Length: 160
Image (tube, rainbow, N blue to C red; front, side, top):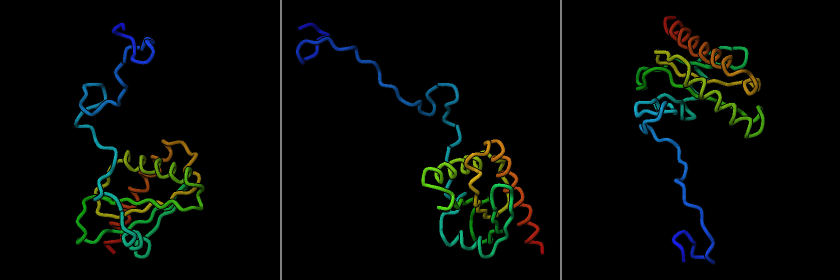
């Protein structure tokens, strides 16, 4: 049997090509480096517990923007986290699971790309359905503005 024939019936097999794989960080390819930022925010930068969300809703303030409502509260000094902690609420009113997940992905990316604010503030974004179809650069500017307003107004609220 020839060297390139398969064990089944003597048919010729194609030479095996290396399987495609995603570039790992540090592969030497452009855009991939071991120092590249991670895509996820660390857990210390997110609101995770129901009690944290409730505290922001009940004790915090709210700011309405064109396509979302921003709830914010100055964080107590005993909670050890630097910078803002951000949470998202996307209710079933906004559509099916596919639409809600797409809204959450767009919002998370906009929060990730927004310029960081330094204040110890907890922020909850409650988007409207229009976030699903609006241009991403407009969403990014609105999220950035919401974070900046939350930081400024939480600081002002503390001084009162």
